[in-house]
Length: 509
Ligand code: NG6
Ligand code: CA
Image (cartoon, rainbow, N blue to C red; front, side, top):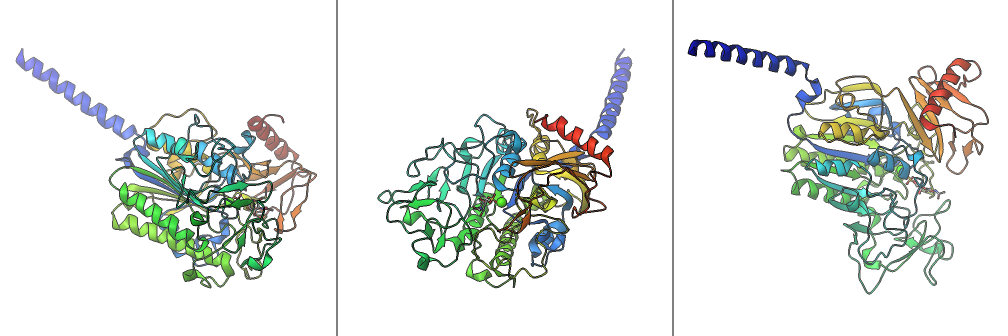
């Protein structure tokens, strides 16, 4: 009897073992490389073009970005969802196409919070999975409920959509209020000198670029002629808050220190850091240490500065032995622009550098350079260095990271491309809607279709082709990477197929 039991037990153990071996073999390769929850860092640049980085052929020295690229996976078809900041950031964090959200347009510094506090976001799902979460840098997704008092606790904001910690500028470096906000409180604010902000009219007696041009150390080219802070005129009016005003030339260092502090404080936990650098958006204000370093004026210099900051963050991770356990995503919110509102020699000193890479257009444009941005994933020892032709969008990080940390999320526009981001497959999206200034186009396979749009074909001040045309445009990016030859009339079958796909995603409007 005992013998018989032993026999069955042995047989059972053997079958169990066999089952385990078979199921392990069947288990997704991706699962095998993730042994514990990795830290996740999204390094998000502001207006950095596809061709601005050395690893995509740029002429500005970006050794740290290049190192990340050389040791990581470079996506040749990596996209921001939009050619401007707010919509891209909205889509990145929520996994929802920005054109589905009416107010996802470039926001002022006093606009209300764009993300619904009940919406799923990357930091929220990370938090649910046991991560400590932080944003450091540019927010530009609105704060408060539309009527902010900058002198009290400001909410809702990043801390209400999933971030445990936040150290931000509200909107852009060229918009008021020009102060840092930590967890909803303006840093270094003197209650005796309260802040007031208006995007309608000036506060009596406050200097603007129009009435006090002698106060300017950087001349404005277009629109940036309101309140003057640190000799730079901004968009919007601001009064008070003198002790709280940021110093433009130390902004990069300030954000870096905060990012490093967050890493050090949380190095023994899984952490998620959204490190949103302000460069090379205007006003370009390199620290004196970097002035003249690129030979291309302030725009090049702030790229060199941003590259250095990335290097510093990487050093911190390396010193703390965190590189093997940290997934880093490096990308940009939209394409490049040279003249974006100040005379800062960006145009004059650009030389033969091509911030837009091989593409046409730039920031604000439906042509490729608007949304086709630098895109790298890096994870030491886990992601095999190389390049990928897969079409990936920042929109896909939500679903992919949720898979990585095993959190269930509701259906969004985000596709789970975890194995693509980890380099296990070269399969990406089959199609993607891109957006620029409330206009949309479709990338599908090697093709791009842009529906007819009224309006200027070129933004004169910025010297950027918008991509608008009275007619349908159809381009094959393999044969015609800079969208010169419109095949819409020649290849009506392809055009119709593209229009059908576009409609099936967007509806008929
Ligand atoms: C535009 C500004 C531009 C920049 C941009 C925001 C004008 C004409 N242009 O409205 O200078 O501030 O907004 O850039 O005012 S973004 O990268 O945050 O989208
Ligand atoms: Ca931007």
